Length: 219
Image 1: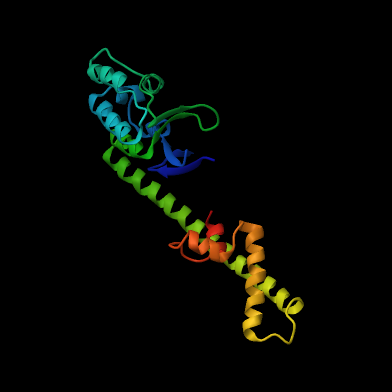
Image 2 (image 1 turned 60 degrees about the horizontal axis):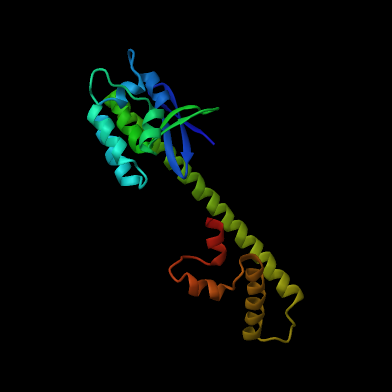
């Protein structure tokens, strides 16, 4: 699902590809004064070197042979290369040309921030600011959802323990025996839902905070 931010009056789409955020540089280009094309940016030698370093750090399948050829031609007056050609020749993953509803050229956020400087220094700063604002809002919503799910889990667990108390615990049992019944019934639920008891989970994940139910809600 695509998201949008607004930077200095320009609406910009953001998509997620393999859990990484990609920002539409096609949309960003609308904020540029005068005639300017992504291919103009891509043929620049500094751009090619920046992209090469990024791919080196993030892409084990990057084609360095083709990259060296492109780098040697970058900046020449009569040389141009499209995003599609760049991706096909070098197997790059930092730029994506997409079709459909959110079609256009997208760049990994690291690269999109760099592209923002080609619009203007002001645009780059506001782009970064708006992107981080979006991520902060998403994080806040996730925290709220997690808090609600944890509360709901506690309520459901209380209903279960109340049912045990009302229907499964004989009046003659002492406190130790009652606690054993609660633990046994809870582990039956844990086995049914998670395939392991609370004790087994704790041994398998000694550094995890909370309990087995908390951990399942985070996923």
